[in-house]
Image 1 (cartoon, one colour):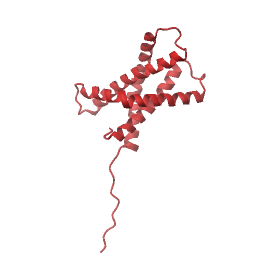
Image 2 (cartoon, helix red, strand yellow):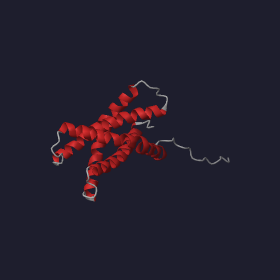
Image 3 (cartoon, helix red, strand yellow):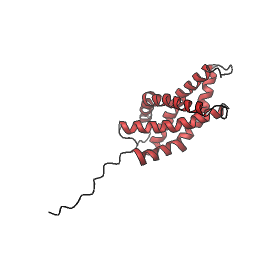
Length: 167
């Protein structure tokens, strides 16, 4: 898909935006906070989580996930296998890191309800992975790839129509 660093940056931001929006509302729903949190708080949450997720994706998880995905033994000439390998590695990495972020915010807002941090973390990872992986494969991934190709991907500069030389 992306072939340049600039395209890779835009693709990552697009993917991050889609996943952050869905995952934020999923987590609000699973914690019973839909309807109790104001629109302003949701917007602040979306922006904060997006910034954290974008930094994590661009500088940590993205490079590691790509390295792992392309080192796995599969036929890399098949685009669907490359997409699947990248999705598994990216979702796994992002869920592990962003669940840690979610655990930290829950801990500092005193909403862990006496559970151990270890148990809470792995419960979050499980809940987030079972939603994030199909979300990535079925909705966000295909949508972002379509929008990326349609609006961002450099399709080459078309030459303008030349006027005939009448001389």
